[in-house]
Amino acid sequence: MFDSLFNFINLHNGEEKKEKVLENVISNISFRGSNLWILACAIIIASIGLNVNSTAVIIGAMLISPLMGPIVGAGFALGTYNFPLLKKSIKNLLIATIVSLTVSSFYFYLSPFKDVQSELLSRTSPNIYDVMIAFFGGLVGIIAITRVEKGNPIPGVAIATALMPPLCTAGFGLATSNFSYFFGAFYLYIINCFFICIATFFMVKYLKYPSVIIDKKYEKRIRYGITTLIVVMIVPSFYLAYNLFNEKKFIKTAEQFIQKEFDNNGYTIIYKKINYNSSPKSIDVAFLNKKFTASEIASYNKMLISNGLADTKFNVRQSSDNVKLEILNEINKSNVNISTKDIAISKLRQELDDYKISDSTLLQEIKAIYPSVNNISYGKVEEYPKTDSAKLRFVLLYSGKTPDKAQFKNWLEIRLHEKNVKLIEDSEE
Image: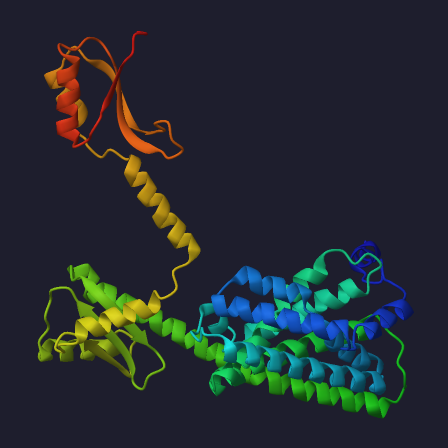
């Protein structure tokens, strides 16, 4: 039973010849000619995607990027103690990194749009989850590379490990002199490169690829070095993940406080801003009609500690003459980018409003004034009066007899504020 289970999960099943795998890995390391051009084009596409906040464009850039080659090569070199191959992989990775930073910085420097979009901002604060994505993505990648049938995982690995967006974000940081963005994004890029390489190293050792040198001393040093680097890379990411957890917890607690003290008491909030990164942390709100005295605001500040919001200041925006302008500016900043989906929805709603007849009493009035009219159906239809352009016309379909059809039509036009109402008598009953 155990033998059959082991055989079921055995990675040696379907494995490509080691010589051929190594040959393919080495051939994808170098950045010369076409590879360099493909990389530059992919960087520009990813930068445009970050600039216009398009996830689809960013994914496309990741799919065509050749950055995985030297990283996987470095992992193979470490796993087989092939130091010339390691040197070559690192050299080509440095070339690719410098070219990528140069191209992305140049693009963002020339781009008239310097706004920080959500896609770009998400690459500036890496944490332990990014480490896990890079490691397991790297595992999938190296497993696929060592198979006879490569299958579909390779494109997915390129998307999951996300090497391009952090590099482009780092280029944005350089172009705009925002070095906090640069260091945060570049750290994410290093995390991705390193843990893809480490995943490759472990898989190469597991699949028992032959070593170039067999020296226990060198092997021990490499393992110590890798362990040290793993700790050095992981510790900051744990700190950032812990900080992210605290920020999410603070925002959730602040939202609960606002709901309990204000929303549940019927106060209409027109502005709300929760700032975790200020010192002290702050909660700013503005109300539609309610005015608070200084003593009331002070009492709310005292409530913060008992509600789990220590080292936090509660502010009510109400006294300043420019508070409305400030609130509008904040709202405009958060809504500066209206997606094409929102525009399309707004356009469709407008078109539906042209056809919509929101008059709940019309049918009752017709039946009261003209009781002989029944089986009534009405609405607006497009009419093409001997031209290519359409105009909307109110049409009413009915059965029965009216005392005066012209009078009925005239009454409807006045009642609905519509010109040229069309009446159609349905003779089929």
